Length: 158
Image (cartoon, rainbow, N blue to C red; front, side, top):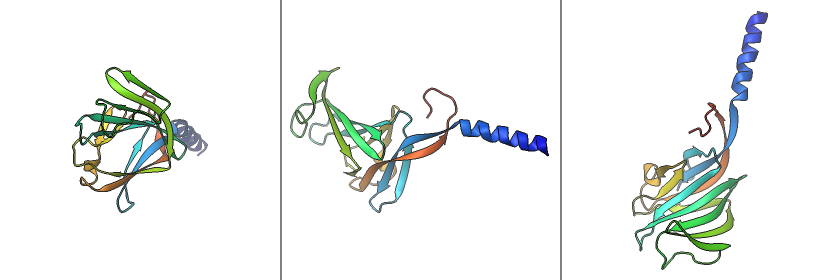
């Protein structure tokens, strides 16, 4: 009996030592139903879309800060109508892309899913298209939360 309790305590301790609380990107549909929870082991994600006029990629980089989403930079390929060039802390060209650095904080971000393909979020180099959860021209909302996960010891868990 004592040996069984000791083994149980050791097993539970080992499990508890591998549990981590990580930031999570919460995606809700237009009816406010959660359609996805994406763990963000590095606390970051990219809102990716193709500009409807220029037909070039736009990437908005976010950090999770508590329950808030902080936009810290925007990268895009074509300078022109509808693209930011000021209002940030710095404007530069890096690796052939325009970059605007900024700090804007949001509690949540309402989005209308584009009819132009490739609209989604990039998490750890993987693109998750919004259309896997909702139809184009549907509303979604991005927000931040926390999630308890079992960490398997890799340096960059997925």
